[in-house]
Image 1 (cartoon, rainbow, N blue to C red):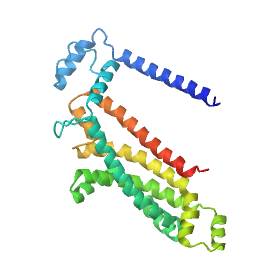
Image 2: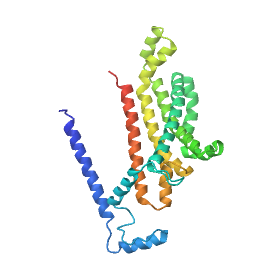
Image 3: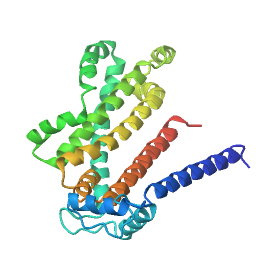
Image 4: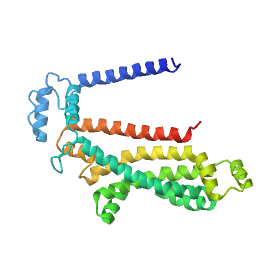
Length: 282
């Protein structure tokens, strides 16, 4: 038995205890007090929702939440029109946009970062531009994207491209520039060609830093797509959250939030797995 196994078991037990405490606190917080039903009825009238008589709370209980998730999982890919699509379809749109923007950013950032990292002149010359553009919120580009591209879905992909490119570009340039001089001197002594040196010496040495940039980028991209879809509407998990807010469906919002977290975790784990395959070779 691995020495780490007992630690993992203890960590799992602690995680389950934390989850149980959270659910217990949630259940207690959503259990109605003596006057809560009347307050909920008045609130329902104010917001124009159905009367809340018989409901435990305007905020869903854990049981309500579980039932809602079960309903969504039973039929995640239904399509009843533009404003009524299953969560599976909404997530698919969001993941596809993130994948497209992230892939485009990688195609631009990694080669460009490679060139910048190999040239001290370019590194110094382009650094002011990078430092100016990097802090700009990706959503600030959305109006310009909508104006020029005339398509909300393509504009969302462009925003993902913008937010993904900087971590990859900066990490790639830094990784390439940080390759040990001794290795480059040896390759020069052996008269290794520029292309072979780039792929056999520089790229393997810079791979851990490049993959770190990609991992940061995928996390930022998934954060940004939710906000972008809230702005442009139409489809996607961000639009679903905003649409359910307009419908005052807190349970559906919580369900979407949970799925956003789970998908984000899976994306991070996927890139982390790729990072291990690339950087830790026997």
